[in-house]
Amino acid sequence: TATEILYAAGGVSILRDRASNFPEGVQALPDVGSAYEPSIEAVVAAQPDLVIIEAITQARFAPILGQSGLKVMAVKVESTQDIINHITLIGKVIGKDNLASQKASEIKARLNDAGNSDGRSVLILISDRDRNLYAARPESYTGLIATTLGMVNKAEGLKDSGPYPGFSLMSPEAILLANPDVIVTITPAPEPAPRLSSTITQIPPFAALRAIQTRSIFEADVALFLQAPGPRLVEAVEALKQGLEFKDN
Image 1 (tube, one colour):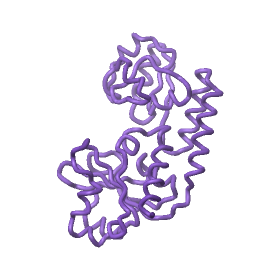
Image 2 (cartoon, one colour; image 1 turned 90 degrees about the vertical axis):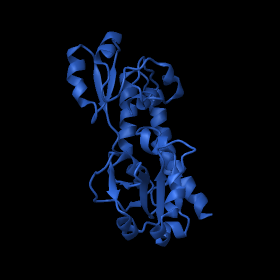
Image 3 (cartoon, rainbow, N blue to C red; image 1 turned 120 degrees about the vertical axis):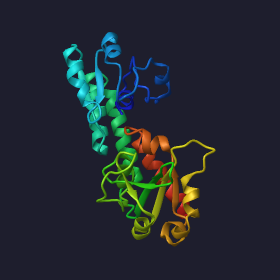
Image 4 (spheres, helix red, strand yellow; image 1 turned 90 degrees about the horizontal axis):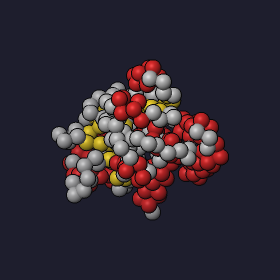
């Protein structure tokens, strides 16, 4: 999140956490370890002009970095406006106001073109190794993608459970009861592992689901829908819209 917002604002980084891999150029940067347990020593030794952290998962690092004399900013993505605001703010801080404003305007225009009045109900599903199914809650970043298009998330009101933050375990019975117009599937394992969009149709009770009967199943890109909570939200929204339009045709 922090890395992608920085680059969207026209900035560059001298270090990265191990999970940051976009834009492609950041993969050549030295990494400081896991985003959850980075090497604070390596960050301090590099003496960056600015350290950007993710507000929810990395807040505990702010006091340590601050005591070391480093300037720290925190970012988070819980709404499309968060993305716009942080790109604009970081652009001002790093002296890239014009570039950041252009990027923010581009994102707003693309989201406006995608629209926000789809109206269909949706479940966004992911599976674990034991084939349990989890649905993205509206409060999650993954859920935000569908909400931005104006879709109605049938996982609303469910509590976090299972290995995926922001997702809730759903039994086959609960999925049948929800009976969404659209099912979006995410498959974490790379190919040739079977896609969830294919295997879910082979679960006998699910033949009664409206989404399966109308073939309204969209296999989402795992990087866009699960691993990149930041400026690429607009790409995820566009991909979902285009995928659903293709299914409609």
